[in-house]
Length: 474
Image (cartoon, rainbow, N blue to C red; front, side, top):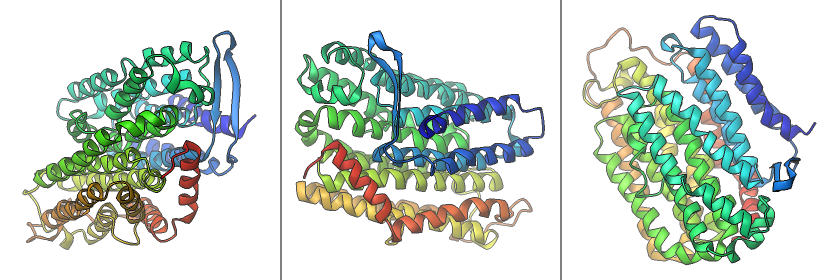
């Protein structure tokens, strides 16, 4: 059996295993689920590059269960396998109700995302694209806060509205492209089929909503803030990458000339999204909402790189997609730990916490410095490549985008100042500092942040190979 197929199947087996686990305490179940989540991460290193699985599904209709593990897939699948244990570790286990169902949904989502990021059959890509919404909807609705059902419904409506026509576009491409869903074959003919412009526009809309690109972001602030901390980590670090991956896997290689023609309109939208997200983050009085707008700004930074149609910017965008997933998950992890201790995500009620929780303050500062792209951290390399690549295409656009780096420093350090470094509040007994278990989660993330910042060559090589596969040329 192919190692790639085993990697795809493991999360579904773990979901079943969790569902069959006898009733136990929420804390023990969290530890059990966390240990299980490390299995696919370890097995990831067994799967050989460029391995593939191709099983006829409906051969008369040209549908095949076709998975491929190329350079682009490796980066995004690796991110999924890294973030899922972080999301599980962020669970407040003593407060989690219906834990079995929650971990079942997390592993189900992991399997669906692996399928999405490795699928080379457009029918299965569409299936996984839509199916990822199901576990996220229930995670938000069941364990969210502040009208969770309404938040989950709003999220689902936006996602479905964005991709409602995608099935029609897939079918149009299927019939016009020789009645095949094979993405490698469709890539050769997609831009020449009848109604190609409409098909391209529909795919672009679906990817823009899920990432999201400005102005399709109205679902994001409430969803990120009202979802439980592990749900927010999964949404910000992984779901947004589905839209970016869709651009890299379908929009750019299927419709290269149309992407280049649309670039003068798409790049300004993405840059405006970066600036809008930065200003919105600066104005927030809730640090979880601040991080949510920060995430929005950073994914639009990545989109500006992809829309620029530059090999250097695209490589930087792919690398930065990985970096963003790691950094934003780390920030929401710290935000969750902070909320558990002080009982609020608002600025004002408590401050000066560095005096009482110095380890938490230092860990938060490292993740903040990663977010603002301090040299030697992971984000610096990606943002530098993006700005250099965009500068070659449009110096003025690069100059405007570069100001976002300054704004990121302003709003992220404002969070650190308000919460950790102003005059201390009166001490409360529940304000405990980070313990050994929390350090065991934070320290690997810190190590990855500095490794990717100091020695980015191995991952950059993968990103460059992915750019070459997409055939982006400066």
